[in-house]
Amino acid sequence: ETRLHAEAAIGCVRNGVRRVWHDADVEVFGSFATGLCLRHSDVDLAVVGAPFPSSTVSLSVAQTSASLIRELARVLRTYYWCESITVIDTASMPVLKCFCRPADSGSSVEFSLLPPVAIDITIGGMRNTQTGHQTAYPKSRIGKARNKHTGGAAREYVLQRIWDLPALSPLVLLLKSYLHHKGLSDVYSGGLGSYSLTLLLAFYLERVPIPCELLLDGMPVDPPLSPTASSPLSCTSEFSEDSDSGNSSSSCGSTLDHGLDTRGGFLVRRAANVVDRVLAAWRSSGSSFLGTLLLGFLQTFGFELDLSTAKIVLKSADAPGGAFPRDSSTRHMALWIDDPLRPGVNVGAGSYGMCHVQAAFREMVHILTNQQVFLMSSQNNGRIYGDMPEIGLLQNLGRLFEIDDY
Image (tube, rainbow, N blue to C red; front, side, top):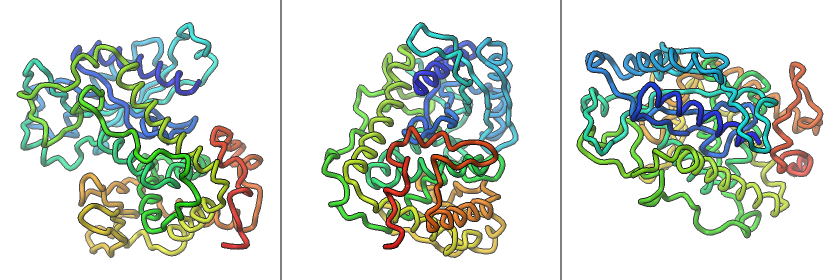
């Protein structure tokens, strides 16, 4: 139901974008495209193929994106399905935040009875086209942009990590819900965003081997992640040094014309399939080791690491990663997570309230180690933790924790 509602909202935005720029499209990224979304999660969309006006040649990537975002907002706010729009055009990656209430589609789901879908729209870059259309952004400027859009690449990275680290998806889902209900999940207010949380958990899990016998008899050997020549994933959709801005042809073929069923729907269903299979493997294993991993993560990032001085670097093919001391020039940042896709770029720069996140981690340790009822009956500011019923694996923490053995 939630997925169909969100897909309908994506279709509304796609139609609105094409009204502004006929050759443009939207691409799904973020938690909705990695299967790590909850009922309250925003849908992240990147506009690809928007024409860069010649008048913006002298502007930065962020300034040009802000101009395009404002132009798009003027049109989208005229649609009946758009309940509200907020433009944040001063961020390093300008964003248009809107609430979309799509009309009922004749399916069994009555969208009018559901809350509006929160959608974040950013400018994702120039899609290669078969027309040879020239972008106003010189390739040299795009390659140097440290705030270039990497949503699609991050989506693929996270999906691969979900498969490589089987404990990642259930722990992300649990902690996302916890931080949301503590008011600490929004980067724009200094909280810890979904991507940063995922990277912190991946960093921890890389260093904690999971005994194979605990888990994965039910999981296939190879993840279904590699895009094929005919897959919608074979499109270039980010500002990329590998894409020639104007002379190369798109590998998307006609998939752009078929809407969400061939592109956005493929991404969403693929991600849901990956996460569902990982969660099912945990359920069938009957192991409480997942709880031990959760406590270990909370101890590490709630008590042990001084995140105001540490630089978190994940493992790569070339380096083992680790928590390294930062130099004095970056000590003003509350959190530094090195972007695995752009080494040297801080993914956690917006999380200026990280001290409050760490306090919430410490509070969670106290709750769990005192064996208090946490999920199904707990409330925070009058709000029940309503996300948890959709994560059957985590409905009863008592099954997952062997507190006495920790």
